[in-house]
Image 1 (cartoon, rainbow, N blue to C red):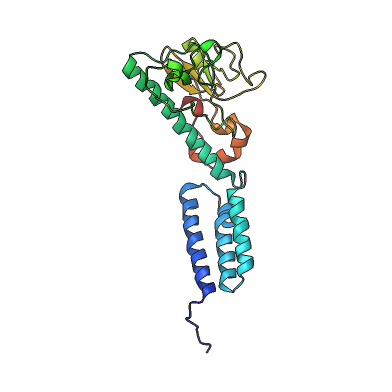
Image 2 (cartoon, rainbow, N blue to C red; image 1 turned 90 degrees about the horizontal axis):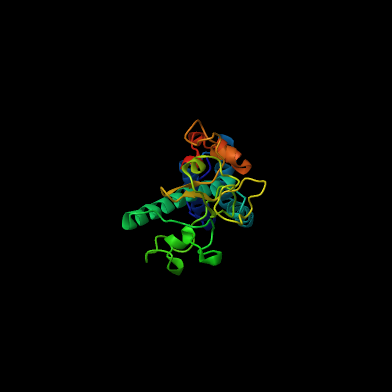
Amino acid sequence: MPKINPELTFNKVLALINLFGLIYFSKILYLHENLSTAQYFFVAFLPLIVTTSLYWYNRYFIATGLLTCYCLLLLAPKGCPPFDHNARYNTTKNNLSSIKSAIQLYHVRQSKFPQTTVSGDTKTTLDNKKTLEAILSNTGDHGDGTEYIQGAVPAELISSEMGDNYVCIIQTKIEYLSDQSHRQNCINSKIPNAIGKTVGGYLYYPQEGLIRLNFKVNQNDLQMGQQNNVGDLFKDWKEWSTKNPDLDQDYPVRW
């Protein structure tokens, strides 16, 4: 009967460290990512078994090489789309919530909502006109002396990877509730990147301090019927949305 060698050699220590590290990573995937069984096998279980086995049997260089490639793939901009999309999705919701909070706090202190005179995504525009960003960041004395946001209005990250923080100002409630995804009714003589295509950014109605993401609205009134969920708004989100079935009734235009 062969004897079992209980000696904990260097390669076995590396194998155990690798094993526990990847188990921990697998737990994070399980808790925070909606992966199919096949995806989970290739993203977590297979790398765990292969690299741990290689370390255990003294294949240091091969194991380290594979582990390095594995990490580089995860860290690459498009190496693992679910991670990137989840971050963009959650960041956009948080950014919109922060902007709404800043507008409401301004209203509490001033008994009125920020009254912008022009659309834009910069702190001030030509002729020193007030953008929402200029008022909330108190740039050029356009605000009330308080910085409700620091720096720029945070961009939404759903319409593109680079994001869009252009705030389209409209004059009526009907316009706010209807489709403005081409920025056709923005108060501004020069509207960037809006001709002939749907863009992102925000839509702001100063009279009531209402702000939403400027995505396509299906009906004449966004309060009527269902709108487009994130998977239907932009093609690169469709695959992501199928892996998040709990969000199939989540309409960003209503956030």
